[in-house]
Image (cartoon, rainbow over all chains, first blue to last red):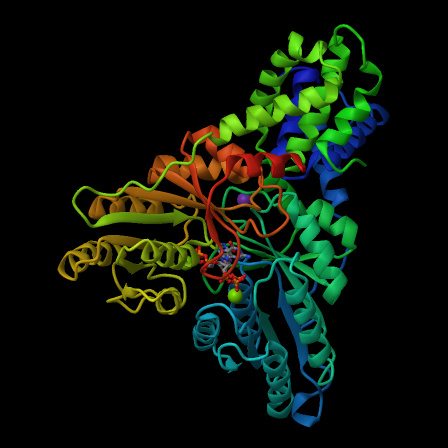
Length: 284
Length: 299
Ligand SMILES: Nc1nc2c(ncn2[C@@H]2O[C@H](COP(=O)(O)OP(=O)(O)OP(=O)(O)O)[C@@H](O)[C@H]2O)c(=O)[nH]1
Ligand SMILES: Nc1nc2c(ncn2[C@@H]2O[C@H](COP(=O)(O)OP(=O)(O)OP(=O)(O)O)[C@@H](O)[C@H]2O)c(=O)[nH]1
Ligand SMILES: [K+]
Ligand SMILES: [Mg+2]
Ligand SMILES: [Mg+2]
């Protein structure tokens, strides 16, 4: 990339290809390239190394590195003395890694000395509650579940209620995967959130995006945000070859940061999102 | 913004009516719009490039320059070429001469393999077969339970001798699954495997070992229709690591354009055989190349 010689048209094509192959999309790629051209002129960049460093800078900047990325998962007051637990809702389309992320996040909190309760509000997918229960016993968190086909809002309500009574620090609610195009299922998700809010404030709504997702990721983010007001993105499966470049558009349009990344299937494969490291991997 | 490629090309070419030939500039402008439309549909960049080169060639020919409406003619050509690549005729499943027929599923994590196992089982049962589902994902938490539930819903037997969650050898279960099918006279075996990444060498070797153990008549690569540019890398990794004979596109009930269909077909040469379009077991259809072409173009 930008190697060997002047910045000829071929180098520009390489830059463009790198960005397109990372799923930034045609429009965002064009914008980044335009920005880079401008910066190269104003800063009088002479060689490919400088240009490469500048590209990195432009990309990191486009990810708004100053956005706050901490996950709000700490309780309000002391739960042992009437304080309320933090409530985190985990949402997204089918198969992105919601249940796994819920388990991993519980692991981080438990390792930090917190008590965590998991709500299995996916009452639809075959063995979804069992999957979450396995995660619960793996990481040391209690699980509240309903029967198969039960109303997910009722299960979520029960989980948060139980969390309040038990005085846990954090309640993580796993929800069923649903395509954003299914209005009935999206209404159901809105109801899950509203019902939970009768018990306690929802501190985070994490939208789980799969890094392999292409341009559809933006549409997913838009619709989920309209329905449940997403507060953070989790970008999963970054351990594969996919770069996850759709988050450039998602962050910008939603004004909501990527907070966490998934780097594998194990309990410890969750990390904070770091714009610099993300861009380095993208430019690979 | 224009919604469809057709609208976009019409706007680019609106002044061309009655002009004799398209100028090179006209053709370039046209191809730029097609390129953007394909990229927005998540068609992989190398595939877009070769596709555009082909379209450019045809757009220079008389079928476009002499058309009353060049824009419509270009759209027609793009559509034809897409259907061509996607594969004109749908291929049927290869059935073994000496049953059981073995169908192995492979793909990335969360693509829809286990759900597809249930769909295939139900569909095959409806055609008079007696399928057996074999639970070879012994890794993902409760993948075995999931397959058992799905099998129950489909009304078919599930062979699950190992509990999973890290316990048991998937290659061994696969081998025993075939023996069980022979013993209990199942004429089709569907082998569900764990999701794996193309870069995970150990897991890819395991998939190859399962393949060697069961000698499948079909290996179906299951891919999420929402996948972006990674489709090519991943399809190549599964082609080289396991080898597959057909493709199944899942989650087509969403609004993703599904350019991956084009990418995977073009890069691996393997046909797309089925479309999965919902979470329920009946949400399943044979693949229709013409519908997919219109979908990719947004028409
Ligand atoms: N390689 C990799 N695999 C992951 C990651 N996160 C999740 N997975 C895998 O992806 C698959 C789907 O994960 P789940 O957590 O079940 O996804 P989900 O969003 O809960 O799925 P549904 O509830 O069915 O919508 C599983 O095989 C996980 O092990 C990750 O960061 N990297
Ligand atoms: N909307 C929709 N959801 C689907 C479709 N196929 C599968 N799913 C859902 O996608 C999620 C993942 O499906 P699975 O069948 O568990 O995927 P998998 O490939 O077996 O996943 P791993 O075993 O974890 O790799 C589940 O929520 C399914 O219900 C489909 O065609 N449409
Ligand atoms: K990656
Ligand atoms: Mg789940
Ligand atoms: Mg599975």
